[in-house]
Amino acid sequence: MKKKLALMLVFVLLIASLAACAPSKTEDTSSEEPLEATNGDAGYKWPVKTIELIVPASAGGDTDFNARTMAKYFEEATGVTMIVTNMTGGGGTIATSHVKESRPDGSVMFFGHTGQLLVNEVAGLADYGVEDFDIVAVPAVDKSTVFVVSADSGITSVADLAEASKSKPIVYGSELGGYTHLQGLIYGDLTGTDLNVVDVGPAAEKITNLLGGRIDLMSIAYGAVQDYVTTGDMVIIGQVSATRNELLGDIPTIVEQGYDFAMDKPYIAAYPKGTDAQLIAQIVKVMEDITSNNKSYAQELENTYKQPITFFNSEDATALLKELRDDYMNYADLLR
Image 1 (cartoon, one colour):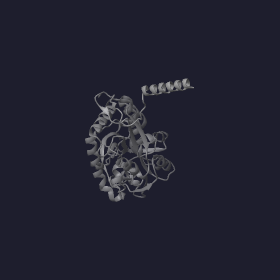
Image 2: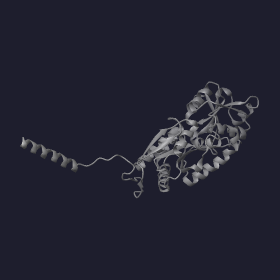
Image 3: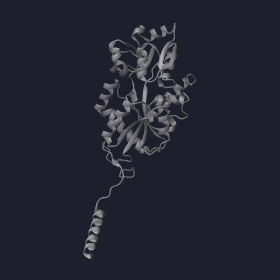
Image 4: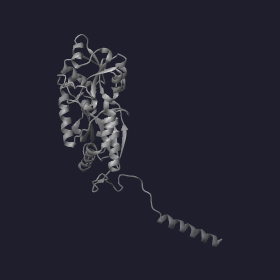
């Protein structure tokens, strides 16, 4: 009996000794060794392993596409994972307020467009704006937005549309209080077109309503309607960009047609106020390198949304957004 107890004691001590020698497992936390940059700046230690991109739009649209495409190539360049979280509702205010109130530790970033960050402030839907965030960059700009009518309307130009509105207001499909709402207000003012703005929802709903004859006009990304234009169901009356996007083919801008209307849609990457400036500078460096040098990234933008490469760093992006916000404020009373 004593021999058995002695053997058992030896066995227990042996197990304890092996356990002490075994490597310990630790949880994956932000306190672990920072990741080394893999994009050529080996001296930088990333303070986060994962960045959550809060996108104030549903999956499948142009904003979501731009966020996911940048996230994919950012991860390839750095080893830092970018996870896209679609956070809809409130015209984008749910997403922007979530990011604004997040800890400024680099783990949560906003990725949306001017409608969600600027127009909501102009419309009075949010009591905060550009100054309440650290703007990282404008990593892309939608230069593929077009104004579209039904082929059955017989309208083929901005002048035709303005003339038609003299006898009957043009029904313009929009998301009330959002970016396309403001776009319609500015368009109507600068082109002398009488518009009746109605709320029909996002891009898919606009298309359905235009094909069904319930609206006469919509503003939408070219990629969403190019098939309908090819089949002859829809007619593009003009590009919204100030200069022609050659990727869209022989489609004149509204400016070319003699009207002082141009309204691109910048996409915005922004952090909560107080985020580490060195982290922001490194992200800007990586994003700019992707947009300038990664041909696969450029090809995806071109193939999917006919979107040319555009990039604004933190300083230039902040100045651009403030300038746009001030311009939009001229229409605040009409939006509210």
